[in-house]
Length: 75
Image 1 (cartoon, one colour):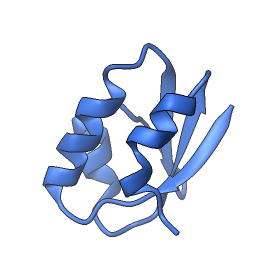
Image 2 (cartoon, rainbow, N blue to C red):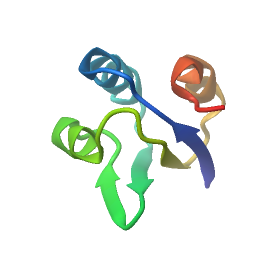
Image 3 (spheres, rainbow, N blue to C red):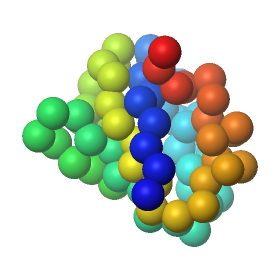
Image 4 (cartoon, rainbow, N blue to C red):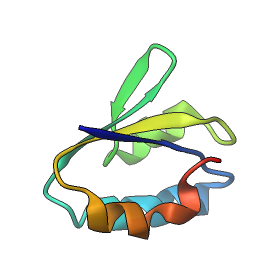
């Protein structure tokens, strides 16, 4: 398992993120506080809110994915 902290500033970033992660046949979760949602779920990601740092957990090989989502990774 690999994990990254990610954040979204507007709904367009969430849609762009989803178009990237949906290409991968890997299980992924987003976690913020006590909430855990499927990282490929639009409603789930919107429910986590904007401008919040959430943890993306990837259950598989994600070397290429990491490069593609680098603009969403929180510092």
